[in-house]
Structure formats: structure tokens, C-alpha cells
Image (cartoon, rainbow, N blue to C red):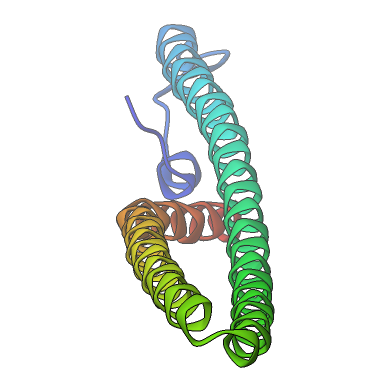
Length: 167
């Protein structure tokens, strides 16, 4: 049973010879005790729920930080690979030019090898970019998936704020 402040203020007991009716007072005290016990249990459950939700929020923040770190390190790796690939391509082309000057036949052979290596590097870079885009898309989907849970958490926090104001 729910007993409000107004119920308590407006409660009137039957007057008897030596005061109020003992049976009515005892019965009302029992109702008030049950209502207060239920509210205490409810408050305890709400506090446990708040702790669980705070823990979940903390976990999501840690995951978000980990994802950001992963994205940053991935971007750095991509940049490093581009620079390295560019350097390697330049070195290979310089070698090809010097060998081409010594003999035409060796130069043509080496030039063909360089083109194959460049194409292989381009294919590797394209494959890596596709894999990276796929990884980033999956991470973004994971982040988007958590949005409904965050809305529930915010809704519960606003309800908790309302309950605290009501106290």
C-alpha cells in the first residue's frame, strides 16, 4: 500500500474515551510501516541499479577511449606505410635508372620488375585501405549500436533526478 504525505496529514482517528481508537492507530501504523519498508526496498533497488548503470557507463567510456586510441594508431600506421612505400618506390626507380644507363637490356628487365613491384604495392595499399575502411565502419557501427542504451541510461538518470527532487 502507498501512503502519501497528504494521507498522513489528513488521517483522522475515531476518538474514544481515553484518546484515539487503539485498533485504528495500530492498523494505520502497520500500513505506514509497510509503505516505508516498500519505499526503502525500492530505494535500495534503485541505488543498486544506479551503481550498475554507472559501471556500464564507465565501461562504455573505456571502450570509447580504446577505440579512439586504436583509430589514431591505425591512422599513424597508414601514414607510415605510405611514406615507406613512397621511399621504397623512389629507391627502386633510382636503381632502375642507374642500371638502365649501364645496359639497355638489363634496364628494360629491371624496369619491368619495378612496375610489377609498384603494382603489387598499389594492390597491397588498396587492400589495406579496403580492410581499414571495413574496420572503421564496423567500429562506427559498434558505436551507433550503443546509442539506444545511452538513451535508456539518460532516461533513468532523469527519473532518478526527479525522485531525488521528490524526496
